Image (cartoon, rainbow, N blue to C red):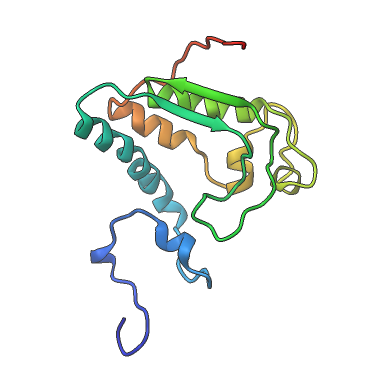
Length: 159
């Protein structure tokens, strides 16, 4: 705050992107040329966690009620694909790659962001179509950092 006004100081920016989601006036935005840099920052988070823990971890993705907004938003849209299940892996990159593929190959739901973005068909990139950002950069960045591999093998458990 300066003179009772908010200001942005890029020298203090941690690159987390929370200010983008928190600003109700949408005064801040991520320029297209900075998206890739931000996505690589997102990939650094599990890397820091794994280095801190210094032991094996298990990563669980709940593919339930998948909406375009993060849980930090004050509201959220309806799910844009049906519930797809639960994924578990010791490799964070593999589990996120499978998540991306499963959402891409899922049928979009009517009256959702998938319909508005015209990405209802199976095989269309729902994440990129809805957000305008290709999520594969995060997966590539995480793999480049040595956090895991984008290749995966699916084992199905039925109960």
